[in-house]
Length: 131
Image 1 (spheres, rainbow, N blue to C red):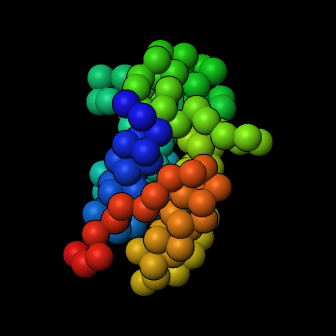
Image 2: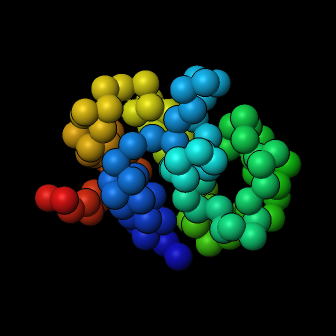
Image 3: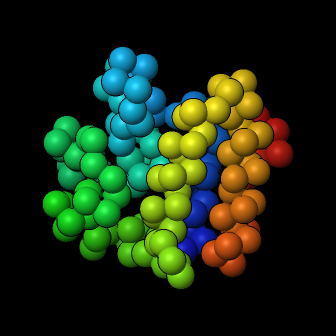
């Protein structure tokens, strides 16, 4: 899997989900939110058989250190690119920033943020023009 394909998977997941994986009670983003089934930019890449609730509350660097089997998955290998920060870290940060924004503007903000990341990492944004 190449970086563009992994980027597309994450963006399309977030676009169709149309909401962040955010827990109002804890005021945190989750890889997988148990109540509503949402998944964050990184959570959507974790297969069901590898997901563990103990993954929650960890940044992506710590997640990959504590669960090194994730590093071997094609999407994580493909997103481990970047100058100062790997793309998977940038995608997690983008998701968390979107969670703090206006829910009515989720898709517009996702698109704008995706354009910035695409520019920074030499990728293109391939999102639907309409839902």
